[in-house]
Length: 207
Ligand SMILES: [Zn+2]
Image 1 (cartoon, rainbow, N blue to C red):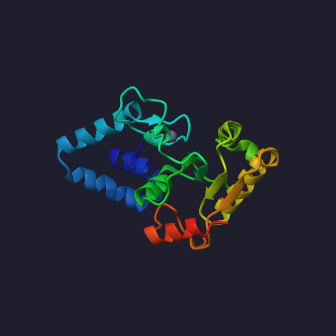
Image 2: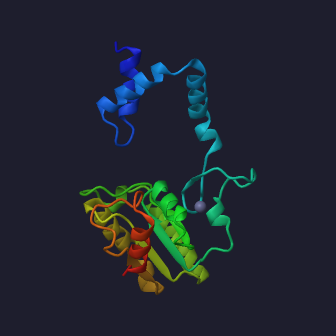
């Protein structure tokens, strides 16, 4: 049976971008902390899913200041935002980065990941939700553009291709623009880490 150190290290090794060596370092770091720190950390982990909601429109994780607003995030409930444009991003961190840079005032949809190459759209988590949302918005008559704000790596391009296929019937029925971010966002670069100017240019040069 594995010991406590190995066991905990195994949990950390499942974190995105964390390898076995780093995960061990996390464990040894925790061993240097006092009981209070460990207690607070454990409590925060335990309460995480109880205090964080998932938005029923854009699918972001959120904690609202308004305790009665449990189904829609602050961005989706904000009536001053532009309803004519929806930006599709891969993950919460991408949306956070775009919001932080104050370069966009439309709506969002979070895919929750990219579509791995060699997988087809049928096995893909939020494709149905995306279709439903876009259809509903088009029926309202306000939606004019969808921006596919995905990294231009092979998985990102595969995802873009499948979204275009999924939304094609809607595009034939209603007319709207479907754009991708400009090449200012270099191949493989992550939206999550792109800086203000890079994002601004990528958004400006979308086509
Ligand atoms: Zn939302």
